[in-house]
Image (tube, rainbow, N blue to C red; front, side):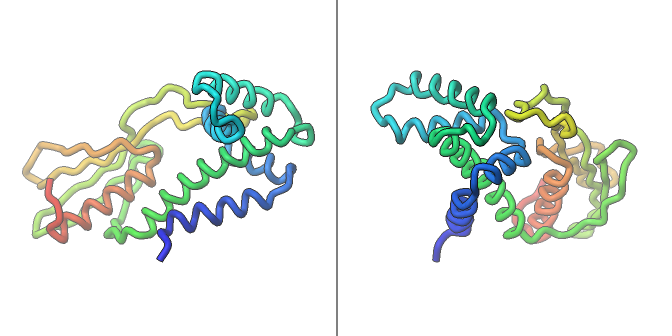
Length: 206
C-alpha cells in the first residue's frame, strides 16, 4: 500500500500541473512563496535542464531566475519560470501535507484549554496516574523577520514568535519542564496533547 505522504505528493503535483498561468501565480501569491522556496524550485528545474552545471552556477542561476519571476507579470513567464514556480509549490505544499498527515495520524488526549493573559497563551490541567499536571502554552522567544514572500503581502503579518509548552510534574514541585519550540500555538498545543497521551499510556515520562 502506498505511503500516505507519497500519495499526497502525487496529488499535489497533479493539482499544480493542471493549473494555468493565472491560477498558478495566484496560488503562489496565496501560499506566500518566499524567495528561498522559489530558489529551491528553480535549482531543481535548472538541475534537470543542465545536469552537468556546477552547483555554484546552478545556485546563481536559480536566484537570477527568481528575480526574473518577481519582476515579470505572470503572462510574460517563460517555460523555466513556470516550471520553477511549480517545483517550488510541490515542495512547500508537500511539507504542509506531511504536517497534516502527522497530525491526523496521532490521537492525542484533548485537553480543555483556557485562554491566558497574552495572545495565544493557554493553560490546561490533567491528571495522570493520580498526579495533577498543569500545562501552559506560551511564547518562547522572538524571532528575526522571516523571509518575505516574493510578492509583497502587506496584510500578512510575519511570524514573530516561537511557542513552547511547559509542564509542572506535580502541584508540590516547583520544577517546570519546557518543551519546544514550535512555530504556532496550535502546534505547541498539539504536541502537549500527544505528550499527555504518551505519558498516560506509560510510553514516556518527564
